[in-house]
Length: 321
Image 1 (spheres, rainbow, N blue to C red):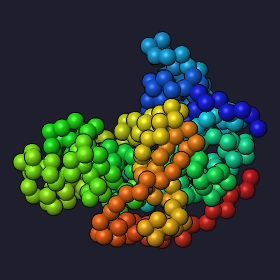
Image 2 (cartoon, rainbow, N blue to C red):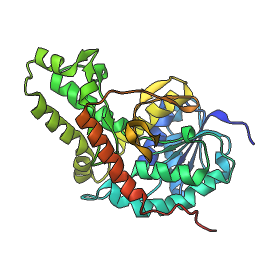
Image 3 (cartoon, rainbow, N blue to C red):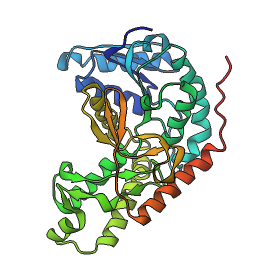
């Protein structure tokens, strides 16, 4: 097995999300080598050229279009390939199309004895993370999805605006599905250690339930709003990919709500969804216990059940060549 090059990343899929992620990763300085792979080779070549032309303004890096043989020594493979979400379409509507695409991609990765970390970004990310685990044969801690990391950032952003504080001082998670059944974990939310409701009252906000409902709906519908206005979302998720890769490459042990296969916590089993996890050089290095209210726990189980029903309609046989 080829030795892993910790400073090499591969991006599979060079659409809006893949190319934006590649750009964000180039800007990050985390990697010295990046290979772009796309079903349309010329698209990957064009993106590699375009991003590469800016390297005199950044850190030295080798960026090129390649194929699956180029991923064997990559430390992280970021999968963004798949059909995009259209206006009015839910992430779960994409399931059948993108599971079929993954049946051609994931066996190509596992067939190269890839031993790095597989980061799934394509939507619906929870279903496709589960699919990647089943098709890849890689350890579960090394196959996970971007999950609700972006949703949680959207929540922090909205709360920061609402309260007039730096969003980085807001600590709050969106959990469950990256999609319509996601839940805001209000009971654990705080601003620099001050319980959220107490901080809200300090800032003159007293209609807690109404505001929480409004903000949670805004966050849940963010992607739909962006897609309706500009046809696709890509900058936010690109920065999310960069953040997750940073946690891995720098072994930061960051606590991020990534999507992974669950095994019994909150009575949820054999379904991939987002819960707070410790992310470092070995991928998911542990789970973080989070206290949820009875109502939040019930909603989390409902989210898992919605995903379970979709999984039960799928077959995970690999495509024959």
